[in-house]
Image (cartoon, rainbow, N blue to C red; front, side, top):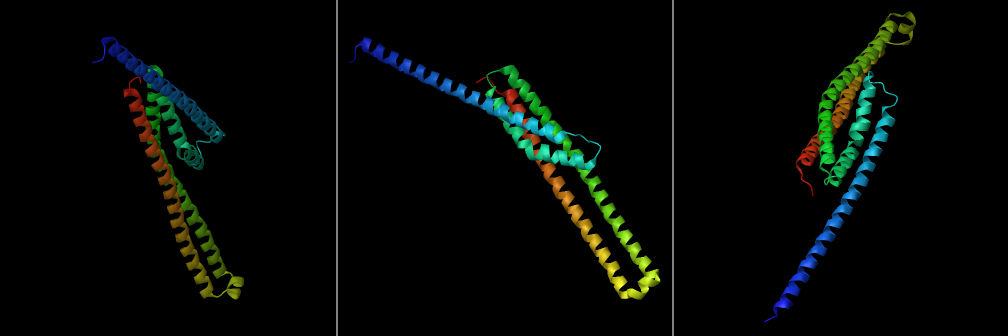
Length: 217
């Protein structure tokens, strides 16, 4: 049997070791959160710089500018925004007021991202219509030149009717091919932008919900 004093000393040493271990874990957690805050703020600053650089000079009335802006900033660099917001939210978990402000901002940005999908779809449809219209106009102009060549004495002497017919058919085939290519290109670009907006938007909303629900830790 161990003496009572020896048992008490042993228990005291165990408690002291547990306190030191707990203090060490708490210190490591604080260092990790400070690191997350630094990296998170850096990511957000880089995103803001890129945002401003691409935004200037603004021309929101131009269809191509709107789609290009959303593709370059929102789609290509949105992961940087999400990563920075997530790190900053985790690093600020000990400050309830700041954490909730970050969470609310994340939710608002997520909703904006999702609503931007409607604008992307609308602009993509308009851009597709413009591209098809331009191709149709150019094809009509070439066809008009062919018709003019048919009725021109000089054209009739140098070009046979069969050659003019082949040229007309070639123009129609090329126009159809260009229209399909334009439609495919616009669809792919629009789908990529919408997909990124949806994924990042939902992630930001979930991040905001987590930040509002998480407790101080």
